[in-house]
Image (cartoon, rainbow, N blue to C red):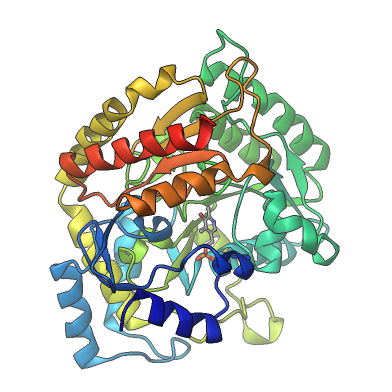
Length: 449
Ligand SMILES: *Cc1c(COP(=O)(O)O)cnc(C)c1O
């Protein structure tokens, strides 16, 4: 079997995620045969450096011997069991460890099986909490512009990436959108902190106005990943926490993409020294191995549901694969690897090396900004630097960088005009050199026509 045979067979049967399938008339699918560390290898023997951690899920590389081992050990004992009425060791141990490592005040863990489901759980729990607490009039959600929380209808409704949302608008809950505190394109001379602080003024006004009807505000702490890796200052989260406490509004932190060390701290919320009322985790949770997600919340929220059955206050939500033991085993192995305190420290050095490797692009006439938060680095391509004029989306400049990357053995998958690195933590300097050189040449090829 070679690449083109498998690709042809694929196109007879598969419908791929986030894809206009007609593109594959001229854009070849890449069938992957195996993965090892930062590398993916196709059926023709070409290798690709996984610079985006396979959609941000992989933390310690592909085919990690320790995670492999923990999953196969678990596989010999128990592959799956219903989690209602029954329990198992990996779920119990994982819940305990998540409570221990997340910010204080997150005491209970509800498992689901993907990121969007975790967001649905958090939204329903928040609404239901207020209902159980005698405030059924609280039924609205506040979200930041340019945010992304997944693609099931509830999660889509509280997101704001028009490309994914616009078509389905008639089906969606109406969320209240406040301006993102993102620092791109702020006034010259204004610090990111001052900008994010200023953006909070508008958020506060909206929350004050709607406090009686709002259940929660949902945010992606520090980095709006699907929204082109836009970044903001932790001060926004600190102010938001204070304001939510004051007004009686829940704070939902969607750390699905930024959790587990991505932004430099184990959880992004730590950089603002806050605890949310709900924290959603997925993606890196299993090291990029298996679909699993978790929503953490406080004992206080938990207790509002705890009552006699006939009072009908229970949270009657479930997914078939909730708390799957293999997924939990992969997550426990991932936490073991993260537990070794040297990971965050090594990431600091890796992040500094990534930054230096593309520093020269700051001067490129089609680069509007290079921004970074820990192990996420983004390069914004612009038609015109003065005024940060974006390329029209129809030109698909990012796709040119993607194609250039594949030709040169690097999987880059720009979001619109934004080329980014979000590699597995095991990436070495020589890989970073290749990744940076390929991005540099790709950006040049895509912008200098
Ligand atoms: C990926 C992502 C989701 C959705 O997770 P899925 O597992 O793809 O459903 C939600 N929120 C954020 C911030 C994400 O990055």
